[in-house]
Length: 160
Image (cartoon, rainbow, N blue to C red):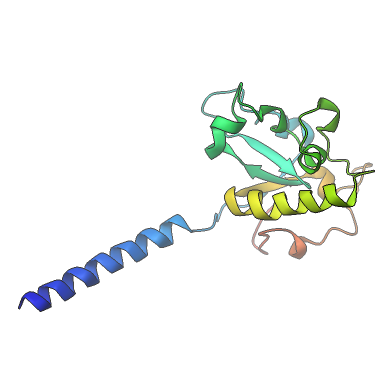
């Protein structure tokens, strides 16, 4: 009798833990957005209660859960509200590096960028959209090289 109760208890406990794990690792089903520079700048950690977004390689991440790093007066607040690809590649907070431009970066810096992009941001923070510059050319026409299916976490039902 005691063995049967123990088995039932273990079954209930394992089902509960499995459900908890499912909830913790559920991917976002929210549609992705397209952000202009102006729109992205509104999510700079300056307003309490508003999400904090930053972009790397044109991919916009919600870094709100890292508020102690990215919020107002936090050490990495300079990186939010914009595409800071160059700064991430160079591990720099210099205002001149707070840009998506990767021109002139060394091979080591590009490798560092890819490592941080894949190993930190894509694994730790949800993707909420893309910058307009990632899918549009400077004149506002569609970038013919942009392929939605090649984008991180893109699913055909996602919206821009």
